[in-house]
Image 1: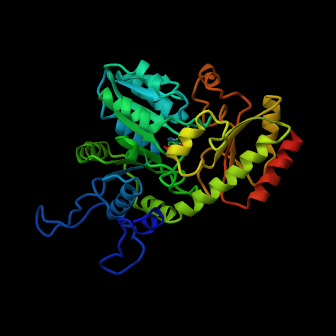
Image 2: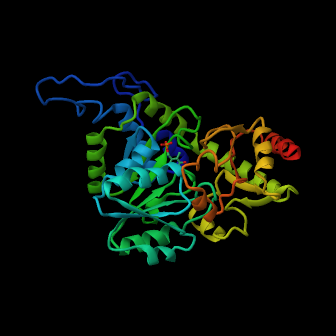
Image 3: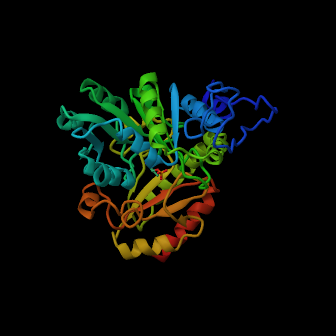
Length: 381
Ligand SMILES: *Cc1c(COP(=O)(O)O)cnc(C)c1O
């Protein structure tokens, strides 16, 4: 099955009891048994829910894995991966990381004796210098948030594997439509399904996809033992969102390409970060591992003033000022005060995340209207 067919059909059958073409929302906490221990594979809804099972089968197919495991949020999915480790183990993560991922590693897991190290992985060889005998997990995001750096997934996976570390790729920014890290050697793919998979800014959800049965069993044990499962209605909404994933992401990427070009030629705009530019440091790697260049664009203002950035951020109307990304509607954000406020300022500046950096999540509106909206806001700055 090709991708556009998988999003609509993989793992999805009409409901056998009624013929309902849409997967029902099984809003139940338990299941009747005909005799003790005699049941239809469902005992208690933390452990299994039929709406969730269908979503998990669909997600496994989209990422070319064997199993998917769903959680109540992307960070709950991260929490489950880190619970594979023990005190004294070390995580090596890319330094330009989602703020909430950084916060969980340092402030929650740090207290439980796990070490985290944040490394510039623009050049994959930097991992070779930093990985050590205690490194049990390598964690990358690509494109990164919000600097839109590209990390060479295949090269990172090869190094992690050589050192016996698990490798988890947070694929939220790309979505399975643009890249499939399991095919490049990753052990675990994570999505905040809140973003492109859901696609309509109406649900918080997370998932993991793996291609190894024993790793899947360990993660399912943690999912059930710790209990951060999603409700069936949320699973239904993600299933519904996924049906148009390919259409939404394709249009959003086309819009983002035009907006990146527009910004790059604007007199008030400084640096524009978008992996589709031939001048982007890892453009060749992006071309190799992604099908399109994504729908996230970040930029600085030429005068680098926080005040001008604040004016731009307050004067768009189609681009709503909000955290999050990946929905059909365009969003504008200020990483330093919003998504990345939990990262200390010195750490932020080290990766180029200045106080005036603006991040766009480009949606699927008409691109001419989006550009006119930005033009008006930039003119007022
Ligand atoms: C939003 C996000 C997360 C966290 O997901 P939640 O669903 O908000 O818990 C993790 N990684 C990335 C890249 C994200 O954008």
